[in-house]
Length: 127
Image 1 (cartoon, rainbow, N blue to C red):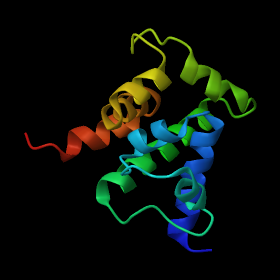
Image 2 (image 1 turned 30 degrees about the horizontal axis):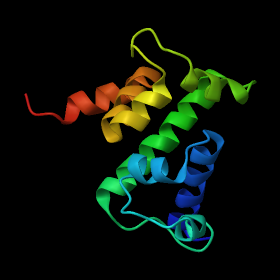
Image 3 (image 1 turned 180 degrees about the horizontal axis):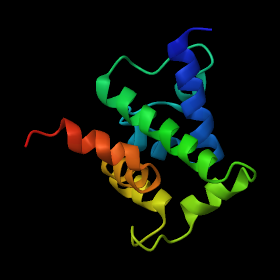
């Protein structure tokens, strides 16, 4: 299987498990308005568009899923629960932050889950 299709499939599966609706998927990933039929083909026979913003957002989704798996390796349902519960430092449920802010929300949630993400962000910014 093509690597791009595999990554698309993996991202779409994460969003399905998170129970994110069609319009929300488009907003979170920065996809242009997409019909349900087209969205269903993503990951089956089509990859995400070769757009750096979409690719970056999809990578954030996959990294959040990986970090949740690392945090809760023996209980796969806890990641979804963590996303839906109000988080003390974020001030709201992480998933609602993602659905309200898109990429900014993805970055905040990923930074909360994965300290290496913060290091990467700070090391790429000019002093």
